[in-house]
Length: 173
Image (cartoon, rainbow, N blue to C red):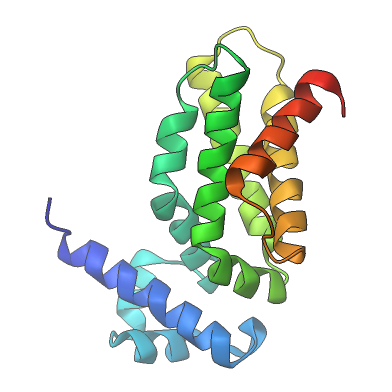
């Protein structure tokens, strides 16, 4: 399906923000800078986003669809959990440069907020009667392991990382 003009505009704004984040600190980037880099007006920016942090939230929501889709399947065995974690770490690695920019700007909390919201929604919609703290447990674990992996240069494969994380869940190692 062909993207809509609105999707293209949002894409250009997201890309503009990341290009600017490579050049200058996030705090020094203004909406005018983003709009100019994206080739749009300030009013267009504000039509889609209230603040520049919202651009990152949009990025998370629209660039993690594969992960969000696969996590909706209720895991039935250890291998299912490994597949879900591997998908998440694979997505993370594919976007390593973006996450480095986000970490450098000290905006990791936006990623954690996104994970918390996503896991809570998934648990509410798909896992009736579960522990209300479970979504935060999984989101926090995925967030912390991802950030540690990033700190270590994303060494090792997504599969290895997923297996070790799931082993820790199953066996406490």
